Length: 96
Image (cartoon, rainbow, N blue to C red; front, side, top):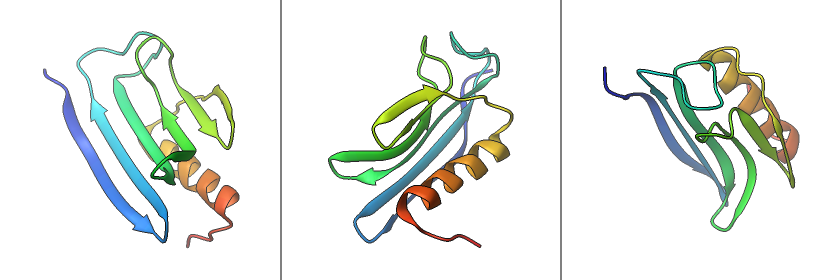
């Protein structure tokens, strides 16, 4: 099995860019226990406000404001819920 893109979204809200991409992999990345690779981003052209990703060797983690911390990946649905919650918290957006 080759890597398969499961989801892609890119949109704007004013100056903010939202981009989300999720792949399913044949094997877990180094540092992750699951077979997903992802990058969920909220920011501006030259600034990251929120980013969830799991680059090879670094494992699952989240960048929020100016901090970086480990992220406990449960499943893709929870990943998206957690991302939108952080975007809402940082930007004071309210999502229904």
